[in-house]
Figure 1 (cartoon, rainbow, N blue to C red):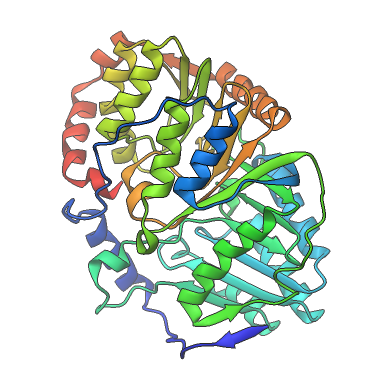
Figure 2 (figure 1 turned 120 degrees about the vertical axis):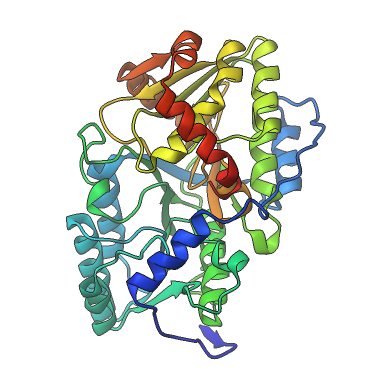
Amino acid sequence: MQTHLEPHRSGFLNRLRSAAVAGLLAIAAAACGHVQPHLTLPTLEVGDPTFAATITGYTEAPVVGGNRIDVLLNGDEIFPAKLKIINAATKTINYAQYVFEEGQPADDVARALAERCRAGVQVNVLVDAVGAMAMPAGQRQVMTEAGCRVETFRPLRPWSRSTSANNRNHRRILVVDGRVGITGGSGTSGKWGGDGRTDGHWRDTDVLVEGPVVTQLQGAFVENWLEATGVALGGEDYFPQPQEVRGPVSAQAVRSSPAGGSVSMYTMFLLAVASAQRSIHITNPYFVPDDKMIETLVQTKHRGVRVVLILPGAIDHNLVRQASRSELGRLLRAGIEVYEYRPALLHAKTMVIDGIWSTVGSTNLDRRSFALNDELNLVIYNQAVARRLDEIFAQDLALSRRVTYEDWRRRGIVGRLLELLAVPVKSQM
């Protein structure tokens, strides 16, 4: 069921104008997106039931049981899984994607969505104006001509307020028939093809989800769809009830948005780090933490917790990498282990704590994710899933180079200069 609330303003700027606006945003003064820096954190343990209750209290995302969750590793697993559930759709498909651009995986997804449209399935595709700036017109045409509705989140226009134009939809959500979903960090592009160990093919992690928590994934999609189109999606085809028990996993979908208060995701990560008792394993491509996040990591390490980070050895935006490296000295000095993934560009966004709690999603550990973007992370309370993510972490670690404090001190003059250049725009990263 769809309820039309207001007319949708259509039309796209040409890509040259979009690129100019995006460029201006990238160098904007660090005047927005500030997250509360002073927080006193409670004493918790991730294995304690009160930890889940506390996360729920701050994020307003209830922990629900009865789910099945499969970890999908890189394009070799992610895209076959997406195509499988798309091809099985009988009623509805909702697909929100930040990056949608050229490449065989994207072409395959567009054609599969179009085929389902022709079969009578209601297909809604939401792409971000900045992330999907390079989306080929042919992909959109294939879907729209088949009857799919393809919309753009916050199109860039000359009269757009800079603050709202800078707030992007970074969520990755695929929900089919309201019962099965996929979320994580991957984009829809040729860059995400392959096994994540070959140059030019990015390393990423998604999860396939069945069970009651899919309702929360759907809720995040319809929130963005309502803003973009003025259409409220609902009813049995989108929110079937009851949701069947599909497995033993308890989970919650934590979402954040500047429009609705972005502190929930930031607080969730801080609480998780502060509650670790044995180990923290973080994989993240854009690691530009604020002082409170650094302080919390260091204090956790001083309590005897092993803290290990895997960061990119190369990155698509070198200024971001240098901004990230500028913060490493304090962490390395405290004994936190830092590694750089070498085979390909690392884009996975995962965290595992004490081998029992984990999260996979779209959120980078930077100010842009915490204060400017709409983000979504699946939080998982299950040892088997955490164990699988730890196995993947160990595999990535074996392909990474350790960064020592002496390495960091000896970084070159060019790197130090780029770190200085990144300072004025850190709040935009």
